[in-house]
Length: 144
Image (cartoon, rainbow, N blue to C red):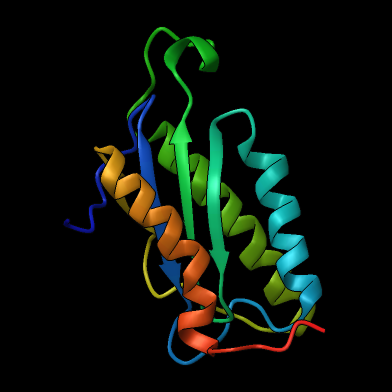
């Protein structure tokens, strides 16, 4: 599947992902993960349903579904409207993160990427991948 930058469409499931610039991290402490999830929940709820996510130190993945026109209370969604909503969350997090650690400049390697999830098999594989991703990168971890 190609990593598109096409505008998000209503009532569509997407695999959303982005990566930190250079060798930087998006998250340094547990509080950073918590803050991102808080911002995501707060700013995304009117526009998206979140099925799964994986937040890694230097990148993140989301499996989301955009709301329908009716749920968005719109007859037509302006071009890039939903894409901007994800951009708003990422920008909000980046500004807070940069301010907190005294950092200047872009936090993300590029704009977030998205792959439409067009069938059940890809959806199931994506959710499994997101849940497995931590173990793939960090191996067996002691959760005691």
